[in-house]
Length: 145
Image (cartoon, rainbow, N blue to C red; front, side, top):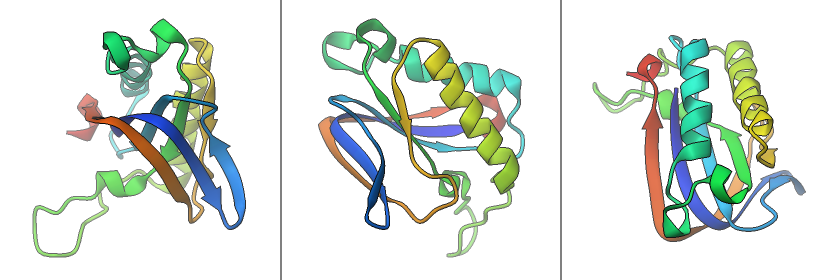
């Protein structure tokens, strides 16, 4: 699993003319890609990392201050550009599997007490955000390497 986690002052996801997910204030925007090799250990690691990453102001984590999280599925994060000019999506999990994993990560974050909004899986989404810092990190689990 691979995530791009950004500290943001605001973020939202729109499908068509409808806002389907938004942060109520400053928090984390998580773009999440699922690989074919991800398992329960990867899910547990990702939930822990997202909730405990000390990248918010004063080296706080989302769990420390109850910061909201917006999770947006993004299979393109699993693309490989090692060869040629066209990315390969061979490592990206199939849609049904990826959706289940993303939902499980979201459930795990909520179980830790975080307020979580989401995008719309498999839809053409417009993601808007205002980075704070900017501060963005890439989080990977063993299954994505």
